[in-house]
Amino acid sequence: MLFRVDPASPDPLFTQLAGQVRAAVARGELADGERLPGARELAASLDINLHTVLRAYQELRDEGLIELRRGRGAVVTAPPQDNSELHAAVETLVRVARSLGIAPQTTTALVKEALR
Figure 1 (cartoon, rainbow, N blue to C red):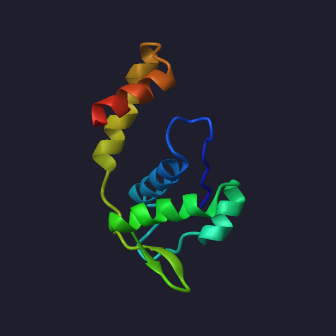
Figure 2 (cartoon, rainbow, N blue to C red):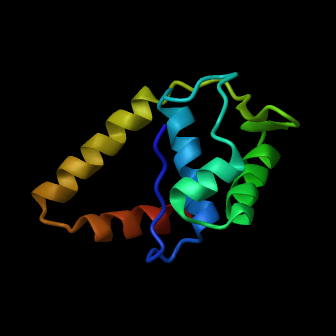
């Protein structure tokens, strides 16, 4: 599983990382019982602070999406959801936004605003 963070993004790095894990679970790329990379290993590969990764993992733990196990690391505990209808709606949104010539950044900003 490849995670990326964007230091130039207005979103905190831990929020970006947690969001990517959530999305991977929602897409079925991370299954129940699957182990996430160790915090030190992930921090080194992303060139970010260890505490940033730990904060993302703690947020996911608090949501019940992962379990932190001593000696085993972070393990996905949430079963995948059927998001096929939502996925289709998002694809439609992207297609419409593109046909209207709306920039991806504007579309993203509008979706974030709607989620608040």
